[in-house]
View 1 (tube, rainbow, N blue to C red):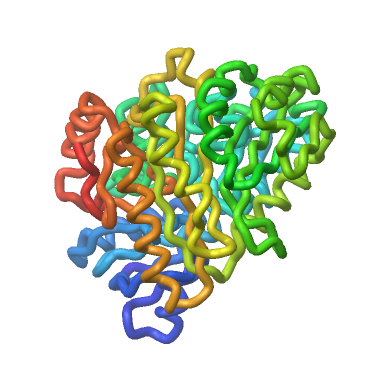
View 2 (cartoon, rainbow, N blue to C red):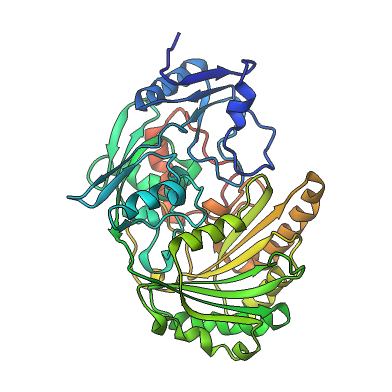
Length: 443
């Protein structure tokens, strides 16, 4: 019998149900259940778990932070390896790299830790997101627009492979696994037990401009946004957000920009909107703390709620896109639902590293439909399906971190990358020990 340092439950054991669904952020949890759960204490437990799964004829699913909207980690008749105890952090001042376990939460754990060294890593916007899923899916972190995908800053990682071997992966060691890991998310055929990440000097100041518009102006604002986003420097994170402010009872359209060390001049383009004078409120070039930005993200992503999410990288003219987008910003199904149109123009102006992450355009649309009770589910699902159907003709693919491929398949890699990914998967996991995606990506 395999002995683990961490805890182990088989289906039917006391505590199994809690272990199977523990740390799932989305409370609209599926009914899928694994055959057993291993809460590993260290990499040797993970390797032993993979061996046990092979002996039992199980596939292996992995949970890092439990934040995926589709609950990727809950799969039928698998061994669920829960990495909740992998929360180690260690900073090396000589290389300016930080080693992190996959269950480290980017905003709540890693960012304050790095602040003590005056360093920064582009963590996920929602502070509770675990680093494992975030990095493997590519990582749309703070100012991804200017600094690139978080996965680009992975120096190396330790991976337990399908044959239960613990290996180091980087550009020069096990480079095929390193290529496949950066962008494949829950389709990756291994268990990452540690990442080593390149950090950057911490920003000196943050400057924020926020314009709040009535939804009646959505068409004018989004048409302007489609062009004006190109006028903002790479130091600026930019988004148009449809939401319902607490206590207001009706949606608004917000254009928000945060400048990392660019100062007020870097945000000047926001004042060029032809209806800027009609904004309900305008806070221009205000100094802000990163803690305040993260607190706002926590409020926007409340715990103990039922989430539906989807997204698309969009390509098209304003004439094509704006009519398809306007309803998603003006007619929201619940008071906590929000939609985002982000810009990645500077990111597309350079050559990214070669990795499985290979689908992107300069416009990113995402919808986060948030309900509180099961009776809202049908309305929330219907609204999201309709929103995505309107933008589908202009979609080049999706970001795995905000997708549910079982509901709406979309491209997650380029054709060439998908072919290479499948080749590496066949070589590295010939028995299919790792089950791949929940739902089939469209290719």
